[in-house]
Image 1: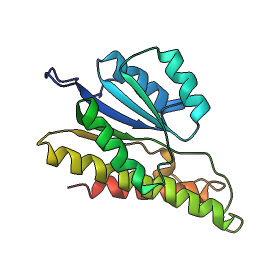
Image 2 (image 1 turned 30 degrees about the horizontal axis):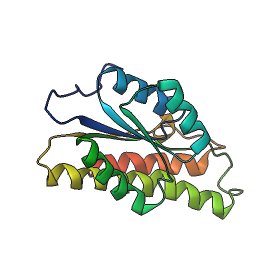
Image 3 (image 1 turned 180 degrees about the vertical axis):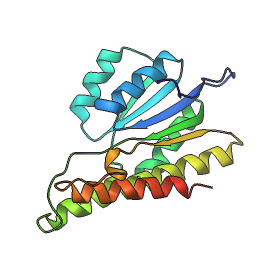
Image 4 (image 1 turned 180 degrees about the horizontal axis):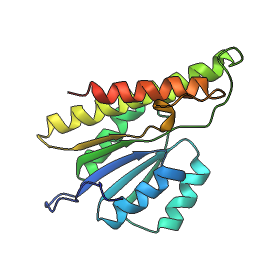
Length: 175
């Protein structure tokens, strides 16, 4: 991962938050950031996978936290925890899940869950990160992970495609 932020060398630990950190892209980012010297808070909804990854990573700089990014209160809690561990300098909004279905057959509950995770989770994560960075006078990094579905339609992934487009829109309006 060549575009990862450099771990600054300050007296306080540089902290990175990664949502969806127990598997896939989130786990890969977690490993890279730990390797680069960051203290990391990994968030995942799947506590069993999160605890398994914590044992596998075997690092005193990894702090797993079970939570649902759709929960608005989680983001502030995580930002406060980052402040206890060091200085929040990086936040990666990566949490997501697979969905499938065409626009005419997506259950309302699945669509609502997509909005809660992909849109609200990304927005509130970015908001908590910006608030913390401003409060502490820190130049930091916020990374919002999307997928190719933000740029290309997929017949059987309508709700996910719509939410990936929204992730891109959130990024464009961070100022």
